[in-house]
Length: 68
Image (tube, rainbow, N blue to C red; front, side, top):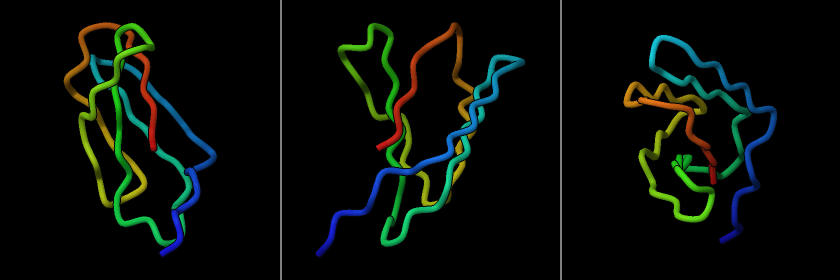
């Protein structure tokens, strides 16, 4: 089975203690793991939506997000 490509065309919007992520759909993808890091070294998966968007409402300060 082929490995799906990495999503592209990210749009990140922040405000009101939430972060909204949207990106292009990827052929063959069944979910999109969303990871959070406070130090850009240790990452924790926080979600795996089956659609090409996610709203994180558990935001207390600026944190780096990575999809994939």
